[in-house]
Length: 115
Length: 112
Image 1 (cartoon, rainbow over the protein chains, first blue to last red):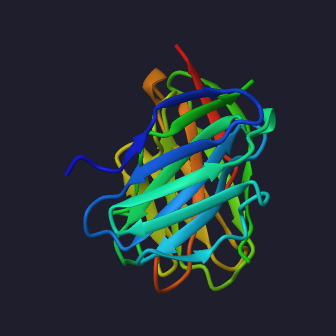
Image 2: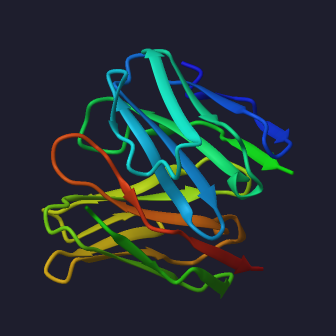
Image 3: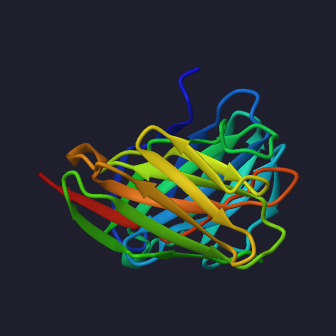
């Protein structure tokens, strides 16, 4: 398996534009997580899905952020409109249904810069 | 919900010294405590974990200790090497499915 695949690796956009980040989880994993990483706040959980259903979106900062998982092999995180303070590295992670972290795998991340 | 505090935020040591990173958690139901290492520009990766029925676990130069009563756990790295330089995250999770709550991370710098 190629692991968790995120695209794009880097995204530079202008303030006010819509940004869409993409994630392909590991096949067979039941859980998918979206995180935002900044120096100030560390690794923040934004939302997670179980079997394509959003379970907890309490970490989504504002209505400008939305996430979908239309099927087991694809998820998107959308920011509309984007703002400079959204600049961060966004990680996707997937996990099998387990109580341990051995299968929990992060993607390589998307570095978002909003100018 | 669970809250995980991690200290220090930055740790600078000389090669060969030991390094200790500490975390506290708030939810007494948490029973699984992993540690992740994130090298510069890369993804976090699991390096060691411990369950609540164990007080200490060791893997070569790294070890983790857990004090359930005090609700804190620590990562110990002995004989540090420059390649240990990275950001380390602790996390806590409770029963059922693995839904980790992460600490804010510790940037470890090992000077040659």
